[in-house]
Image (cartoon, rainbow, N blue to C red):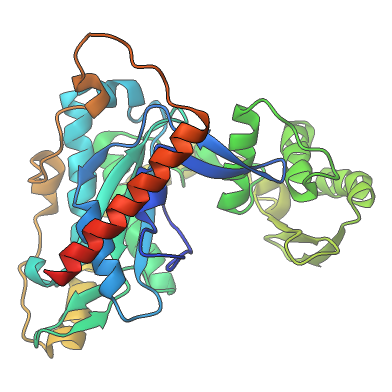
Length: 381
């Protein structure tokens, strides 16, 4: 399992990011063209009230109004089909993830001072993703809503959530994304890799004219298994870049940045082919295993540090929340999830005809109108 944070913290309309998290259809860039992709199975709401979250977003008077994070599991970690069908062990493990993530994100902030949050799933891509939407604010000790960032742009926060990922993976025996045996030969920005995966799932491959960045990434990624070192990668770039009117804009020991004639045509390459990291060894694996044994202690220390900072900033030291018992959270989570995916609860009966074309568009617009009306009613109340 790996945890990542979205860079987006504001959007057009108060419906973001709920539309992205919970909509059965989503817009995707495929071959440089925006297409509507159906999510099947549809997202499942695990915790929270989306309408309350959107109403809160509408009332916040701060520029950055939310944070979104995603936990992504491999099929070996949690099978998405079993999770949707209601596998008790899978659901309990996800409940532990949600509770541990929430406690660390709001360390030291009393539950009654936290603004609404929403958690849901995506399983349409063949793997389980748990999405977290958090309002970027808390109610301070004097009842005022102040800006609050659960993941500030600091190395310390990155380390805190890396420790959390380590703790969960170590306890449940899931794949370790930072393990020496899982070093990737070539990687780039997450949004490029996600778009590439979506493109391949749709059975398409962009031409250099349609989407040069995507074409370059897919080509290099396919060739990376035949490369031995950085010199092979540079040779491949020398062959491909002239075709795309792109060039190498910067080189460091850890990265190679490639740019094109337009601002959006930029890609940064990383990985063992770029930095020349040594291949996996038994000693490195043993050292990593030993390091993971202390992950729970690291999470507890991170929580204490963050709790002290939050208490001082938002309550002048008045808040003194007890430290969470992460050992209990891992084995007996208090978060209650639905027993199974709602689609599994529909009884056997006549199959509904799928809604397509103009009727689907009309229903989506009516749904948005209903949501807006409900938000206004809630705000008025």
